Image (tube, rainbow, N blue to C red; front, side, top):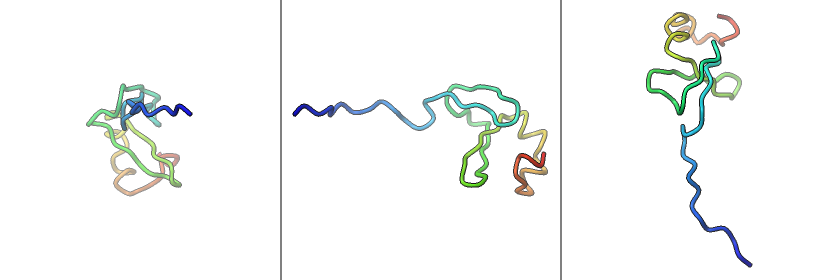
Amino acid sequence: MDQDKTPHSERPGAESVVCAGCGAVAEGVPTTWIFSVENGVRHYFCEDCARANIRAIEGRLDSNWW
């Protein structure tokens, strides 16, 4: 029985991340992006969307309110 014992190269943030606000795509998670957990699901937002909606984000409103 041969089992694959090769370590996987997957690491957090290695895949592309899409902004839940405008659809911008980034390779990995840029340090200037933020995330929100809504109904148990993590949503990432680019710097522009975060800046445009900072009051709603700080008020902890779900993104569908902004």
